[in-house]
Length: 321
Image (cartoon, rainbow, N blue to C red; front, side, top):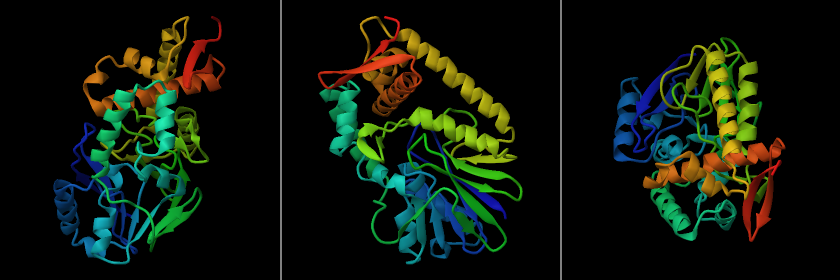
């Protein structure tokens, strides 16, 4: 089974997104790129270089429902009429206007995000959501951990790898131990544990970092020979990346715990301490709050910090104060 990587431009800081074309029957795209004219043109060009057009795509598999990965799915399907679109059931919550639902607002308020910053974040995500058609309703199928995506001469196994988002999925080919892992593992950057409602209880924040560490360990057990990420080049030494990630997460955990003052701190306040320049950029500000909340939540789950609700806002305190 041959994977063909198509590099598709995005308007985001992360740069191009990798779309993977599998030319075997059924012709499949893993991710599609954002809904922009530039991305659509690049996808058409990449397919044309392989003798294909949008109408030839029979299946679209979404690693996770962020706009740079899923935005063009409906546009591609419009040209074939019967293209199957698959993603994990937990990703549907990602696509209903991430900062519009009351639950997400509640999560950000509990994280100490001031009203003016929340309004700014909501405006940002209204703009970002324009980069994808809604993926809901007819023709959107779900995939689960352990499912198999069959091709003429090969099979990809679905591995649910929550963390970056609750429904993030990777795909593993046993025959040669190759892995397609979306934004779960990237060569040059550590993925952000994006703040999301828990799919099982939307009034709770999804424990993204704790889940991510479990997902990383699961992928490591597969001993992949080559891992194809959602951005950047493929990873030949998974063990090296795994150790680098775990070390970076451990170091940030220690830093976060060390920054907690005697009077306690909110996730929003922690984000300002961790990322002093993030306030200049709306996307970075939201990602900074995500990162801070994920680390504080993980430290609390590990018993390193205590957390209590004060006037509807979570305050994290060092256990020893």
